Length: 271
Length: 301
Image (cartoon, rainbow over all chains, first blue to last red; front, side, top):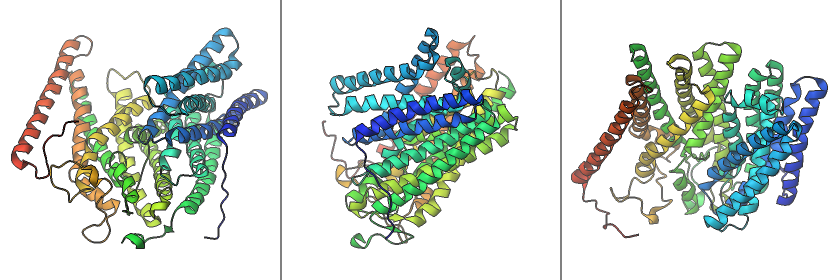
């Protein structure tokens, strides 16, 4: 195969910064764009912001689960989004009660990082997992889950207000799809690429691809909460993200596989 | 209790039976869940294969995803655009099937690419003809589950207070859990290890030594669907259908508010009867087919 595919390798610390900054800036950018233009058409930027945290979370799953947690991959992804739901509701409601609604994102993030660290401590010290990166990993996962939920919640509600999010995300039950689809975006990449020859770029590209699917799903929800135009924009953007990264993922799989064949018998050495 | 309510409960039971059966066959075609560990292990112990490797987070979360996806689409179409209920459910199931197709293909590509050192190839023809059958079964499962949720929220009285996506999430988790514990045993225990001695259980020595060759040619995942549709799928369907039917039956016959005690007592009665029946089944199997040739006695842990 003469085809060269763009691959990459990123340090986890850098990736954490990209995820944190990208998501927080993206969520606020979406909020500012919506407020300045007086529409809700830019809500899709919130969904794109969530993709940064998905990559961050997927890398954290990759690091923690590389210690041999095979069947625990789905559980840790669900745990991430579960911590995220608690942190988001806590952060937004506290901010609303204190009259600083806009800072809800930061409060939720700080709370989730502390929460994740404590859960990591309990997992390592009390339950005896003895995984060196557990505290760090769960702190990352909790933060990533929180920002992913915030981003996609913004994409559905078009607002950062606690009352708006409760009205259009929780009362409608759309939190269910954010929870499960967002959870899959964080856990599926490592789960789907599990094996001794797993590579970071392939796993993370898979994460963005599933994030694109989640954006399509939140776009469908936005068709009802934000109207036809905002929803359709989000679906189209989600589809574009999915398509681009799916093609990239396929190329990376071709690069890494021992052989990709149209059809055939078992490999010659073992027939 | 009214006849209409009882009819709805029966319909929900029937839908659940179909959903359970298709859910199990879907996971068997893709080798998802418990049997997946053996498919994954096979290449690592020197047995590359042509069996689909659909590793999507275990059955409960993945089925929760399909059902919730279908439910949000149906909910948006019903509440936001006033579409007919059946059309909305069908449209939702179609979206869920597409999502499933993407996830399945990415899992097959990813898992096999990550086993390059064991010479596990990626066969594109397997993706082409197996993925559509997986998607078709997921369509059936999510369509049935969304219809159950729609019935609970819009038709059955008293209406369920939760929104459809949340109910679908819970039913999806349930059907996945039941499929994982009922039907997968049939696939993992009977189909992947056909030549071991009956009643032996799975010896650690046999891990990864799955059957890779079929009656003619190499075994593929469609062959597994053919096998599992005979017993594993229907058994799962019966398990899930009975769960839905009996649980709703007792709260339809006895009013959950005024006759709560009777409804709970009926539930306890069902649990006791099923335990006794399970016990009978096991004793009867041991009597008919035992003592098992490969069984060396219980080993203390």
